[in-house]
Length: 261
Image 1 (cartoon, rainbow, N blue to C red):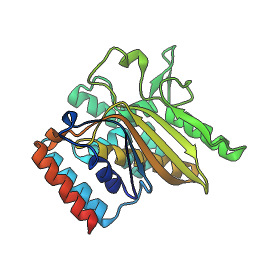
Image 2: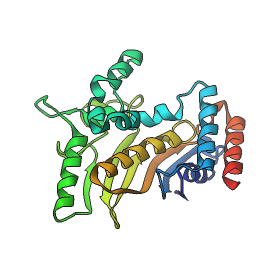
Image 3: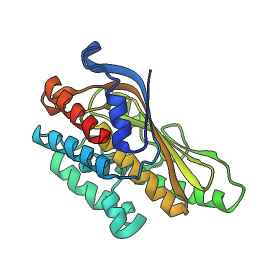
């Protein structure tokens, strides 16, 4: 087990990936638990680390961090038109994504705002969850109530979808579960569980997208984002995403120097 903490997304990511040995079991690790104290905070140093990672990924033909992040939550849409624009995601952003690459299972953002019940009727899980949480804030607040995974009823969100995903071993979702909690001092906690997470190619972008989702939900409810915890039950030091172990090592060392000041 690896436990890592950091004030910012970049610091937490660096503390986690520094504990994954790329030479041990081909860079595999199990139960990597990362706590980001202030997930929405961006300092000059954390921005520089994200820029370094972004540049390395793009140079190797990978998706930039913003693309990875907005696959989880379309923060650009939220900034432009609030939840109304987010709820239009299936007919705007995702429609173009599907046409461009033939995505076989969709995106996390799609699953947050569009599901179908057993009768084939559409519903919006994120909208239903926000309504339920808002009602709780007006009454007797329950702190542990909002679990977003495959086993929840239609009023809750889910990411893993057994009826579609159970026969797939590759090419499907990695983010399986989201849990929102009311914290003390009007804060909103978020815990995310990944069945698998690539720490070079995806993790920092994942944190950015989860932080955006957490911030948007908190904003809608009049709360402040609290800590973000991400539990990767299986993680990989996927050095090939930036050209190999040597290049990945240089990237991690560069990030370490930036955060060390």
